[in-house]
Image (cartoon, rainbow, N blue to C red):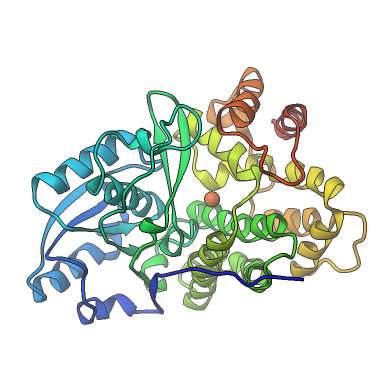
Length: 387
Ligand SMILES: [Fe+2]
């Protein structure tokens, strides 16, 4: 028995140089709020100029909101939504990395709904209200990590409560996503590593969560894991290798997004997002890497056959004791120079670990997971990972 249920309404335009064709595509409105960071990606790649020209050719006006930071905040979302409403914008363009696109998606949600973003959060201190749709979203990505280009999620941090939550709604699938690997060649090496592992964990966690129920998911996850494993080291060692960038972008922005449209990630992501909420200056991929090795050792005890299958996708053959993926993962971490990242270097103290476990279990909750870890399991994973 298996299913192949699937829903993904995003029109994808993929390939080296595809953003040269921006003006060929119909935009979903007459005035855009362009959401981006105040950082370097738009300037570094020249994509903002390219977008401005394409919108101009189509007589579409735009307002720029360029205050998005890594781990985008509720304040930025509310400010962006107010700018859109005050200026009569009827759609958003998320331009840049996962943070800019996630923020654009949450802004689109608040352009179509009243009140505060946290009214629509469905865990923790959220008020669990059901949103009524969202403004249309166009994504133009400069990175390959989150999968937000092709999924229904937006991850936002509430600075007042230190909560970092997913907002999930079919209305925030981008209606159109441009994935142009030439925009990724200037990504710094550390970001390439963090984002590549984020993509690897998206596809492998969905593979674990799926437990072979949805056949399409297994197809996406296998190709995703194999592709990241083969091409991430090449993208890290030579950022200008366009074939490597193309492959990692395909795994991250398409296969991982499609996977997460079918089923969710594991509590590995909940632990990492809790760390990210408490320590917003730490990159998301790094928060995952902090605990990854110990997390998958634990899952290997609970679901050994899935962990060994994932190991096979990473070239680790004939493992039958639930350690295959751990071996493949640590080999990839060694190859990309990221083995043993130290939480202590990012201001995380041993005394923070119990709080991270408390928030993971009590605030966000992990009870949905089929192999439910206990709070003590999570404390053990954090303590064994700490250095
Ligand atoms: Fe992620």
